[in-house]
Amino acid sequence: MTREPTTLSTDALVALARARLTGRSRREVPPGALIPAAVLLPIVDHAGSPYVLFTKRTDRVSHHKGQISFPGGAVDPGDGSFLEAALRECEEEIALPRAAVEPLGTLDDTETFATNFVITPIVGVVRGPVAWQPDGHEIERVIEVPFQRFTAEGGIRVEHRERDGVTRPVYFFEYENDTIWGATARILVEFLDVLRVRADGPLISGAPGLCTTCRHADRVTSARGSTFRRCTLSETDARFPKYPRLPVISCGGYLRHPQI
Image (cartoon, rainbow, N blue to C red; front, side, top):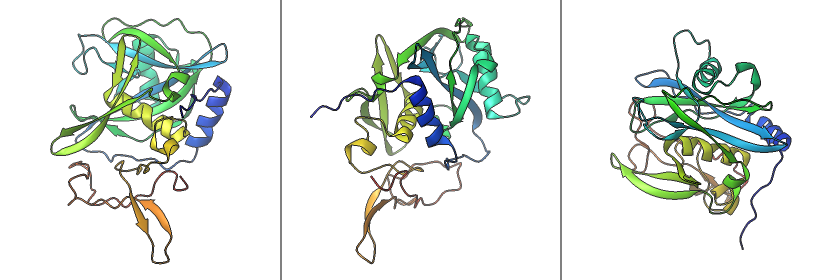
């Protein structure tokens, strides 16, 4: 049976996001060799309907040429917080006024595999009309995607690719002539999973869930016979994510939603 996409108004999506993100324990990467960056995951309101904003990078930038990303960038020494960094970059890249953004919460830190960045994604809502002005140097254009497109069954394609001896899921979303993938798609998928609205995601389909730390989980039976899912990977397992800069030798994390 085909599952209908989740339809939410902007107000309903904002309320859901705030409720799911407030007080949530998130994964934070400790300071180290990775370059800290911050991005905004903007929910843009159009006549009561939510859209997610992305930017297409130009071919003149140093990293991720021509790719689709969330607006944001590296944290500068003068930034007082990750939120300040994300809002400053949005203003510089696409002329989004800082005062136009209502922050809703923060997602897990996300590393880039090909470059040495660790990204802190901040979810925010933009309600007022904004005249987007891509700077032309870093950003070529702005892309707004109806939120409902992400919750439709089959909306997100998953491939499994090996890098440095580790096989990881790689997510792809096609919209018109653009492809969203890489760290941006991983951030998007995490947001949908936190909201529990992804049609073909494990938190909806009932397939094994995802650990908050390393995205893997095993079914475990306790001494009393109770069954639950908990990550049991250790550094000796080939599937364990290789983050040599992190002080992690085993996981043991529970799922975000153990009742699923």
